[in-house]
Amino acid sequence: MGKSRFTPYANEADVLNIGSLAIENREDRVSLHGAVDLTRDQQGLARARALHELLGAVLQQLESETLPAALPPPKTKKVANPFE
Image 1: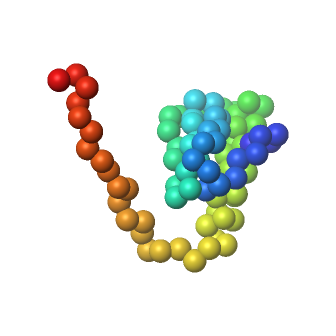
Image 2 (image 1 turned 120 degrees about the vertical axis):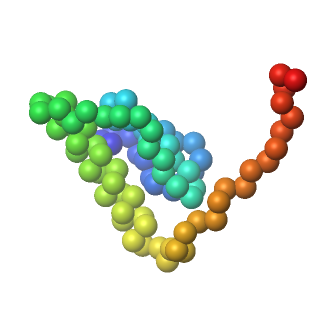
């Protein structure tokens, strides 16, 4: 993560990219999409460190809270199909 500040669960807007892996911040979850190669070179080392820092911050936040056993499913809303 280095210079960028990504505070897990802080908002609904932040996105961090590590390789082709996108980490999306939400107030109730942190979502990871895509892929990242941890190659055996300096670039792989930098990506591994960034992932380690990110997951450390996620763990620290989760361990500092009293957590429910599971979140309820997200609320959904039906909308009209604009193509009909």
